[in-house]
Length: 277
Ligand code: DGL
Image (cartoon, rainbow, N blue to C red; front, side, top):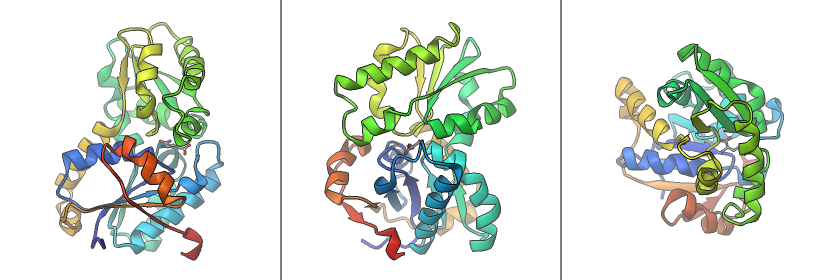
């Protein structure tokens, strides 16, 4: 199926499908084109330069497919590549196109969830080291105390289909204990990686009872709906055939096997070889 002007949704692998799932529920009328760069995942431990180069390459591919609007449904790419792409690359490539991320919409509202005004952030090493969450949250909720914990093993657990196995428990407990050990007042924990909703049952069992868990799918879907309402010029450019096309840079058989769990319905993907660009 060839889509005319779909909304592009990008992630290093499967995680963005947890976001696309909520976007599609909220805005089913539009066409969507998904790309998982599974062949190069995880992005979390990679350098700023590498994440930026990979993400830019994928964004340019979305543009070549007719996308006017691309959502980086990946915190690591949003933390390490989005600003440079928005400020340096878009004016050069095509100033009318837009690339949005997942960090800004989350930081705009995260403070509203907490009674104690203390929140914990669980993310990849890249997201945590970038400091993007504390920096952005400070702008909207200057009094909110923010604690972070990098969970480098969690994306590999999900990408390798080990997320619901007993072995995952050890790594979940390790990082939850380290996060919650930073303050007894944390009442809200943000899953600041789009892969982590797959681990939510284990995370819930490990966190102290009553701790609120926030994942980003709904937040990003609401924010995209709001964006399109405020930008009718962009909204008009997006094609409305309710089409969904999925690409992976790795094996399509593997992608299709795992993607259904993330997306909530069967997925039939196509292969993309970025080197043939
Ligand atoms: N889903 C990506 C995120 O939200 C995972 C990054 C990775 O590949 O390590 O950060």
